[in-house]
Length: 67
Image (cartoon, rainbow, N blue to C red; front, side):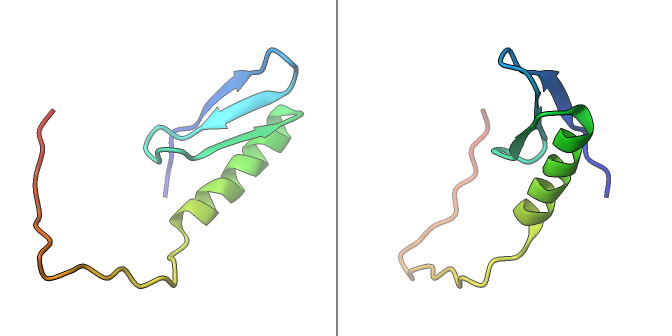
């Protein structure tokens, strides 16, 4: 899989990385290489399936929104 990663220098030093296609997938590091390593781990964790079973009640409905 390929992901676009936005890598930007932090004001305090180091870098921040985020993945626009994975909301909330953000990581930081002291170096560019370290930050890229950290965001790779964050992506893997983000995509890891959860063992929690989601239960949906019989009264639930599906709604599609267009913004």
